[in-house]
Length: 199
Image (cartoon, rainbow, N blue to C red):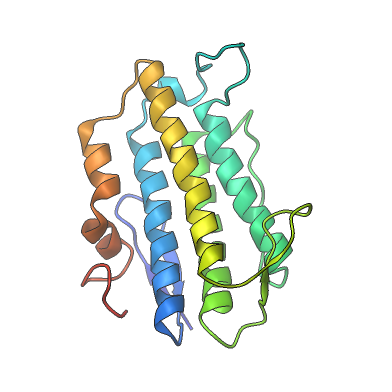
């Protein structure tokens, strides 16, 4: 069973029914992680989306558009390699993707990753190994899977904030407050009591 949860200012997400605390928490953590991405894109100056970041040598740093499309496309790869029985979202094209398309794509891939995490960590699923890439060794499913997924995205969020600042499009203070207010993020993602409470 899957329930819909509407995120503030974003696409509604589906929350699968999970039978243990770890699985429920993993799904909520990844939903909060995606909400952080959504907040950044919402508040980003449109002029910074495709602007060439300052780099030495030139061309060695991705644009913000390329970073967010990469995040979505990597999620698609995780689902394709780890849970091929789930519907894999379409990949985004970094050369043509708009902010709106990125938000919609990330919302969809977040749902698939949530389903994958629910099955892998929620007990009773078909997923026994996490395959982060075709060249990398597969890991037994566990908390490490979730940590890797969130660390990957946190790394890229840091890049986005730095590039926006370098481009003179620093994000408003409410963005930092928004992505660090876990109680609010948790509530926006369907858990009214916040982090640490059973769903």
